[in-house]
Length: 336
Image (cartoon, rainbow, N blue to C red; front, top):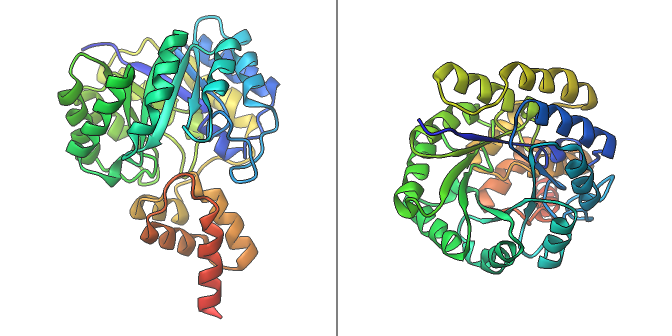
């Protein structure tokens, strides 16, 4: 079997879990541990990517560009990647990240909006960056429709398109079928990847099925740190792949130590598969909405799970975090 690249997003998706409060010292410690475990790509930015530090998404403790520079300085072998959401991050942000040493950008759009990524892929390739494309909330459309969106990204210069289960809503064949559809569409023109969440507890299983369907890059984060119920835990994915004979080059003992001895002591709260996060998976709600919904629940006295159910009914997508307040107010008024 072709070797799989296991990417780590502790310092990007995991930023949601720590309310974007990573310090330079913490970034150094995590990068050092991941690098020592032979992780080849480490993603570092605000949870919502370059430019994400804002009132709407939450302010960072330290500028993500400064954290990128710290990560690049600490890594000996790993490539440092950044995330960019068009309309939030800009080409200017991308150029600055490149100047700070980033070697890859993953450009993320809603699963039906790949066309807004074209300019950013072109700019990234001109800079010589490795490129990845995130099709977020991939459960929202059929495998064939998702493959058509992947085609747009590949034609624009994307080198790996990821099926992104932003809500942790995909279950087994629902993930594998989407990966296969992308593989069938783009063939050898680009790779296909998978990014899973644990809301319905299928992140690791879906990652295995993604590989069997042809994915060549898989995401994880240490101790599952990430939005919602968290990401597929890097240390569990690496260990499972080793047991199954799927080659990653990752040192299993060192990646387990990175999660247990380095990451866990610095994190006040680890993600959990609880009622609210399960509802996110059930209703297909964007995982990063969880903390926003919890804050709205405290303010308006409405259960978090009920807010998330209504958000799911309304079909909100990433970027509509401000609408969660409207939902909480509506539910509060209805209960009065």
